[in-house]
Image (cartoon, protein in one colour):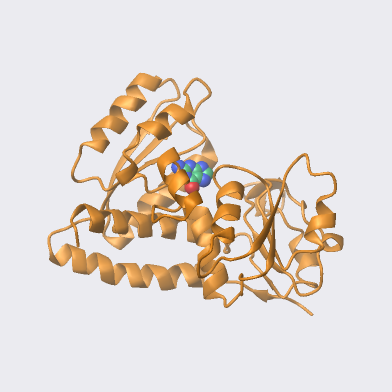
Amino acid sequence: MSAKIIDGKQVAADIREELTKEISELRERGIIPGLGVILVGADPASQSYVSAKERACENMGIFSDDNRLPTETTQKELLALVDKMNHDPKINGILVQLPLPKHIDEAAVLLAIDPDKDVDGFHPMSVGKMMVGEDTFLPCTPHGIVQLLSRSGVETSGAHVVVVGRSNIVGKPVANMLLQKKKGANATVTLCHTRTKDVGYFTRQADIIIAASGWPNTITADMVKEGVVVIDVGVNRVEDASRERGYRLVGDVDFDAVKEKAAMITPVPGGVGPMTITMLLFNTVESARRANKV
Ligand code: GUN
């Protein structure tokens, strides 16, 4: 059996269509949602993410204030820009692209963002609210994963979800979101990481696997059971001389082999990726709504 491919581009397009209606209603009331974007340094992957975010804002009628700062930017200068955006009524959401250069204390920067504009959901206040199940901005990639599952008709209630990877951006929050006592969640969650003794022991028991390790081939066919649903969060560059740019993108899952056992699987690219930016737009629109009490 070959798996059904979960089409992230299509699900993202459906959500963007819903958002387009909401944005035009807001604009009719004179409200233009605004996103402040800050990128420090010249990491090529971060540059392409940020450009994609800016393009998405432009296409959707969201104002975006783009700030590309040199690697040498000091923490003080970055904090001053965040503070300016905190007080700018045109800005509803602030996004500081991670990772930041080593000389900048990431935690201090995330803490400086006004939680009411924390559309990335990385401020400790947002993380805490998410953990206790209160309404808050949910981090974009995990929120996108939950949307992909529910909009693809995957039942999470009572399912055993095995998350592989414990990053603050994906692994920890998605595990937390799926164990909440809420519609679209209610899963039994296992979180595996680099010190897990036998990842396959856990993934073979999984009804749903969320692979977010950051390494190609973390999940191979012998590590999954028949009928599993696989969400691949990885975006890894592997050398490929046959491509003009010299590399191709692969996920964390051995896609070709695992798709023969899985019931559903996300491709890379075209799976989780398009959802991340879409959920950022979703949070920015939600923030504009809250700020204007509509
Ligand atoms: N770096 C990788 N993913 C993300 C994300 O979702 N938000 C931010 N700010 N940085 C990231």
